[in-house]
Image 1 (tube, rainbow, N blue to C red):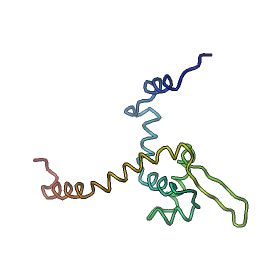
Image 2: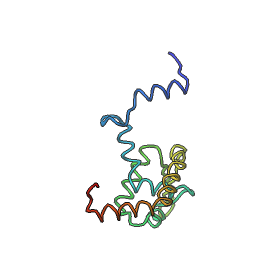
Image 3: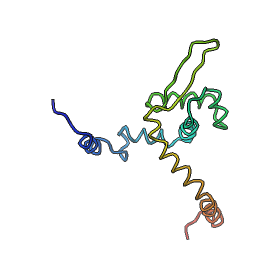
Image 4: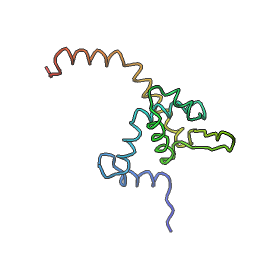
Length: 136
């Protein structure tokens, strides 16, 4: 059995995974990561573990159904860990895994960009709407 280095595995992944192809698993992963609830839940867990109710209160406007669905997806993808503590009532805490934590710098940059460029986006939207959405 041949062993490969981390660099060789990364090079092979470039060949194996191409997010531009619909059938590629990275395409689905990008779809998951670009979901607003995913971004907000991961950001909410950045400061440490939270209970379900705390997450629901922190992530404004998320329905119980979407929160549950999103947490299950994140757990399945290895980004969030779910810890059940036997007590009355049962305590369930959610936390970022090391893989989930590795996304935080990227999410932080995206959040910072959005906050820093919101005025530009609002201006562009106003100009677009003023012209009826027509180019030119």
